Length: 106
Image (tube, rainbow, N blue to C red; front, side, top):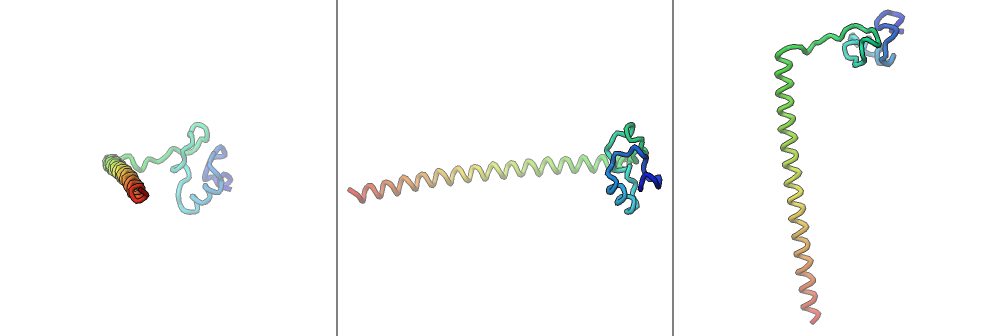
């Protein structure tokens, strides 16, 4: 239907229902498509994000994501250390209980 009405070329690789939903939403299906334009013969992708502001924003977002990942890894390390201390404490308690039981049994 989208092909017959001229919204997309006959060689389009995108799913028909997805194309129709995008068109009904007032969007150009070719803008969000990642298929090779040489294969589908679609319209060139409109580069909405080709600005210095966008590149700086992406750089900041990437930095924030790296910091978040670093903080998460540090959190996981602290949790592992806490678990290890808990296991050592449990072993110590088990030895104490065994020792008390052994002393009572004498």
